[in-house]
Every structure is written in C-alpha cells, then in structure tokens.
Length: 382
Image (cartoon, rainbow, N blue to C red; front, side, top):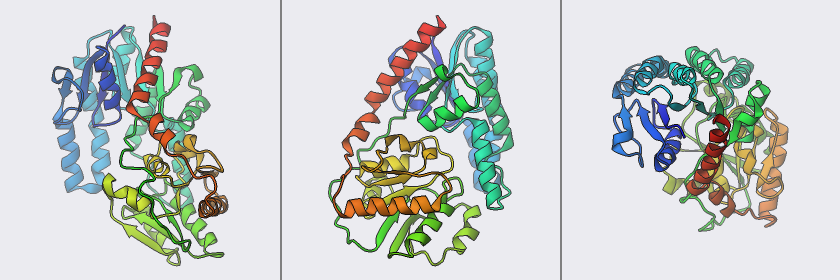
C-alpha cells in the first residue's frame, strides 16, 4: 500500500484525512504553509513552510483588498516546495489548485492522486457564481482567476475525489468526471455545543428566522431578504443575521430597510447554540456551498432548516420533518417553506431528531468511511 502525502498551504479539513493516514502508518508527510502543525500528526511527519502563510498574512493586513490574490499567488511557491520533498511513487492528497505540479509528479511516477472536493467542481462553481454576480451587477470574479485555472488543472490530474455531499458529487459527474471515482465522504463536525437542550421558550410571534455565517451573494441572501418581505405581508417576522457582510451586499441590504434585522457579532460555539435556539427556523439559500456547517449546527439544535440543494447540507434534511429543500433563487418557495416549518414547530408536529446527525458526522464515522474508500482505491490501483 503506497504512502500518502497530504499538502495544503493552510489548515483545513485535509488535516482530518492526514490524521487517519498517520494512524494507519501511511502518511508520508503533512505539508503546510503555516508555523504550526495539525493536532494528531506526529512531529516527525509534519512539514512546514511558514513563509507562505507569512506573505499571505502580511498582504491581508496591509492591503486587505489583495489578501486573497496574494494567498493564491503563493500556491505555485508552495507547490514547488512540496514537489521537491515528496518522493517519486508517493500518492498525494490535496485540494483545488494547491499542488498541480506535485500531482503531475505523482501521476508520472505511477502513484494516484486524491482531491478534496470541498466545493463543487471548479467549472461549475465559477459558472454559477459568475451568473449570480452578473444578476446583481457585481463585477468581482467568484475568486481569483489564477486559482480557477490551477483548480481546473489539478482536477485534470486527479484520480479520485472525496466529496462531502451529493451536490458536489453531481457537479463532478455533470462535468464529465467518472462517477465511480467520486467517493462520498462528509466531513467530521464537532457538534458537542449544539443540541436541543436546554429548551428555549419562544413566543409564537414574531416569526424569528436565523442565518449564521457571512452575508454574501454566494449564500443567496438577496432571496432570503425577499422571502422575508413576502412573509411579512401576512405576519410579523424578524431576520437574525451575523455582522459579516460582503461589500456586494450593502446596496441590496439598503433596499430592504423594511425588514427588521437583529444583528449579532460572530459568536463562539458555546454561545452560538443559544442564538440559534432563539429562532423558530434556520434558513440558508446558498447558490454554491460544498457542506454548510452553519446549517448542520442548526439542525443539531433541533431547529428546522430551509435549505437549497446547493448547500450540500440538504443531504441531512427530511422534508416535512426537520426542514424543507427549496430551489435556488426562489424567494416565494423559500417563504412558503419557512412558514411551513414555523407552523409545524408551533404545533409540535414532527419535532426534529438531532441525535442522528451528530452520529453521522462524528470522527469515528468519518474514519470508517475513509478507510472503506482507501480499500477501494488500493484494490483498484493494484
């Protein structure tokens, strides 16, 4: 069984995979562009190139507008550093655009390559978000173009994709990636701070709708605002949001000053659960998202969630039980679903069971699935 190098310039979900590879004695090295290694990785297997993180941090602090571009500009530097250290014949696991040349080296030396599909296929991601930005006269690209180009090249050099959701899986299949090479693997999520207990005694009015996380076009907030306006034609309703607003949303928010919004700062997990439970319904109408953690936290709190299929987390929704799934860009459908969830909750019908989601997203479940996938990969690659 070949050893596997894990490479990502930043701390990420790839750390979880590296930890399990290390447990199995298969981790060749964990390559990071940071000063600190990851928890659970033996020091002798931790390789660090902090210059990458230092450059990204310095630019982000001094020139915030160019922070993401500077981070992407460091990827080729990180890639060349990893390529020099990883021995030929070593399999490589990374994510979009981080290690294009390292992937090429692995392929040329007969080893397989593994990709973390944290978001949808980059061609799909770029298209759907470009369309959304055009709808709202936003002239920003979905993300820096060099990252898009590197991401597509890394996909071309990928043998297997780990997909956290059916949404991501479908995007790869739709773009022509072999279906049998996309392996379903939801990330482990620590939901210990999120449970229905203690119960929060809510008045029946106003209808309180919460959405945690940043406010942006990608997360479908124009449609949530319009849904709230439709709801308020029939009943009193309040929207609860977090004070992280992308500049492209500012002019749109200004057109919805009739919507009462309760703003809150970004909260630590030990306080976020209480905020979620102070709402009747959670709603996230994302246009593109691999697996929305914020929605998972709400469901674990016993809050019914209204989601689009493009959140990834819709895999955990049982319509009519713990929430509803609505099409993207459909404010009317979202409004109707929010009211349905509110009415069911008010009447005590179909109270969501939050225990199953915590078990499904436990680290033990993640380990079991990953080891099963490794067996498939090893058998196929032998």
